[in-house]
Structures are given as C-alpha cells and as structure tokens.
Length: 168
Image (cartoon, rainbow, N blue to C red; front, side):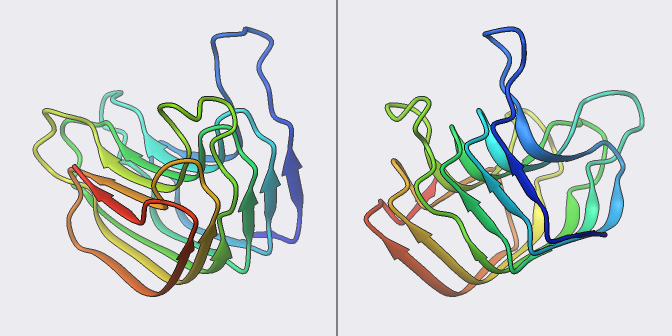
C-alpha cells in the first residue's frame, strides 16, 4: 500500500531512457495506491506493465484511487501487456483520479491521460480495467487510448480539451 506521497521529476541519466513516477511491474499484485501525486515525470505518472520475460505475469489486482497524475511527459497512466504467454486479466481499478495536462515531452505522438494497450502479436489481450469517476483535462492527444484491449469499463468520466477515447 502506498498512501499520500509525491513522485515527481523522475529522469534517467541516459537521454534515451524514459522513466515513471511509480512503476508496478512483473508479477506484482494486490497493490493499493491511495492519494498519490505523480507529476512532471519524463514518461508516465504511474506505469503498470509486465515485461516479456519468462513466466512473469503482468501485474494484477491493482487499485489506484484519489490520486493526481498530472503534467507527465507521455502518459498520466500507462497500462501495458507485453508478455506473450501470460493471461490478460488484470483486475485494475482507477477511481476518483485526475489525469490532466500529460504529453509535454512529445506532443506530436504522445500525450494520453490513460494508455491501455497490449503489444501487437500477443494472443491474450489486456482485460479487466475499470475507470470510475476519472477526470482528464488538456492532455495533448487522446484522453484514453485503447489498443488491443478488451473488457474495459469507463463510468462517470469527464474529458475536456482533448480527443476523447481513441480505439485502435
């Protein structure tokens, strides 16, 4: 459990590497992030993903609530599945969270409030994502980007000054 903290200005020493305020990766599970403020990170405020390494499962049973993911370089929240073998059911809940003004690093190609993606060529799609009472304002591209995802629920969603939901 992570409660009420600030994660900001995460950068790597290497200019080509991008970093995240909070990263949840590779078989992590039963995680609660409550009241986090993640801002001005080079890549994402929070990233939840699994690498394609052996038997690692993508993270599951993750709750992010009452948090602010603002002014990050690419994404407020990045949910990604890379593992070819693992099942896709994640049980991820994002609730009462703001994701505003993301995408300053590369506004021509990035800048999503939430990116929910499964890499191409992976059989088991990323599933089981709930966005409830989420606000997204002034992200440079789409508020929500869905690519190769299934069973995504969006309830009570406010999107202002952006391109809404992008399905690919």
